[in-house]
Amino acid sequence: MTIIVFDLDDTLYDEITFVYSGFREVARFLASSYSLSEDILYADMLCELEQSGRGKVFDAALQKAGIHSRENVGSCLKVYRQHVPQIELFDDARRFLDRSAPNSLYIVTDGNKLVQHRKVLALGLYDYPAIKKVYISRRFGVHNEKPSPHCFHLICAEEKVSANAVVYVGDNPAKDFVGIRPLGFRTVRIMRGNHKDVEREPHYEAEYRIHTLDELEDILIEMNMDKG
Ligand SMILES: [Mg+2]
Image 1: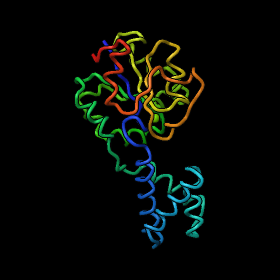
Image 2: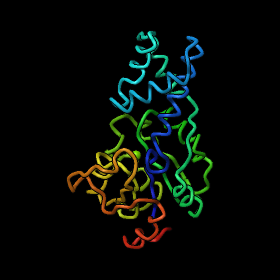
Image 3: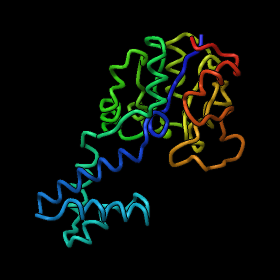
Image 4: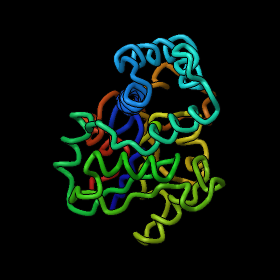
């Protein structure tokens, strides 16, 4: 039997849409608190993201609006992390989940526990019949996030299978495969999102590459794994 495990961000949905959704909510919050233009605040955040990445987006937007303080940065972060995200599954992800057997799939995702929980909730993944369990790895401690194999071992124990019966599909060669592939887990890299053009040393890479989840069934056959 084959157990398929998915990463979440940039594998099942487009992570940048979460970022946009969070910025929009922060812009709305600041606009209503300070009688500022939501659209200008939002545009400033996007501009900062484009120029310097995610690190200081709220600092920059607050500075530009003349309302920077540590407290306001904290409030922005809180709104961002606690907002109900407006996000959707990739079409190919939905198609794959829809044709998968009940309780046949898992998710293993890193990141802030509440943020990841809200994403899973917003994507409707807790209610998806095909998904048996979602592992938010930080619930087991930061040291059990990827590349730690901890959650993958839990899945093996739950399914009473060995590592070679488990396929992980993820997008990030920095951490998705390097910890589990040497243990015999099978790995597939989906080439999309932030890391799609990243080339790493061979031991960071997955066994196979795909561009959409529509290719996954054929890859499973090539890997000599039935879909379970
Ligand atoms: Mg990812």
